[in-house]
View: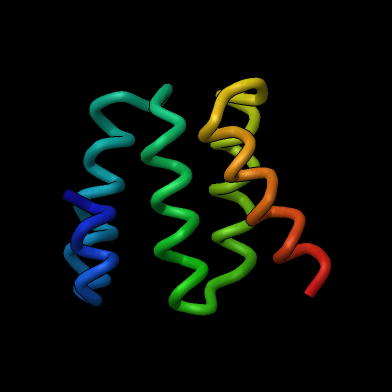
Length: 78
């Protein structure tokens, strides 16, 4: 729900749902990745970098980890 609310521009509710997902399962890399995307569209880049790093650390060899690494690297270079 959090990622769809982000796409709809409902950032307050999106953050609430993504943080709830993390509180339910703190080992869910997709939740951190989507939280990073939310922070990125809000230009909260330091928070986005932290979230992408966490997602990568949890799924370094998976698709979420690869996507997180790409976004992390792009933000670091800006």
